[in-house]
Structures are given as C-alpha cells and as structure tokens.
Length: 130
Image (cartoon, rainbow, N blue to C red):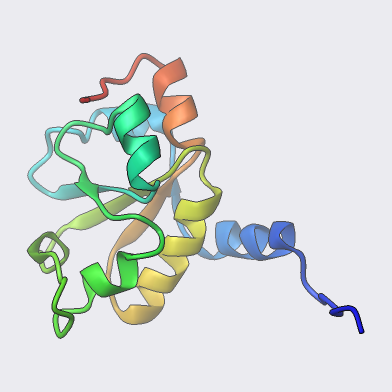
C-alpha cells in the first residue's frame, strides 16, 4: 500500500517561512561584523566547502543543528549559547526556515531567516570565505 502524504514539503516550508521572521540580504550584509548577531549556515558540509560560507558564520548542517544547539548534547556548539540574534541561512532559504522554526521551538531566541539564502547573498555581492 502506498503512503498517503497529507502535507507536501512545499507546504511545510511555506508554514515555516510564515512562522519565522525574515531578514533581507541587504539588511544581513550590514550585520556580518556585528557583535550582536551570529550567522548560521545550515547547508551540508559539501555545499559549504564548494561555495564557501559567510565570514564568521557557524557551520551547522540541517541534520546536526538540534544537537549543536542543545547544551546537554556532546556535540553542543557554544556559539549557540550567546545572548545574540541568530541569522539562519541555507542555499535559498527553505531549509534555514525549517531549521529556524525548530530552533525557536527549542528555545533559541531571537532567530531570523535570511531570505534568499546564499544564492541571494552571492547575487548581491556578499563575501564568502572558502
């Protein structure tokens, strides 16, 4: 018997985009060197290695993010234990919206999603570090 999928991946991303505050790439660019913001790259390691990450960003793949946030996890990243605003991003903004929604549910706050992800960042001339 075939599965009966009742909610599509597009629906789930749409819900996450609606639930998580967004920041434009233009606004995000002014925050790269900010002491009050932490950029979080949710792409997998191969994507990060191929195109680079925003300078100073925390690399935390979508599959490991919950463990990196949780202070009780053996792979907790202390970058997630700061009183700062977290700017989540991925390739185009979908995975980071999903991740941001979960991070907010875990208690991380404040969290925003960078609209358009690395694709928009590169198009706008934003710096990437390889």
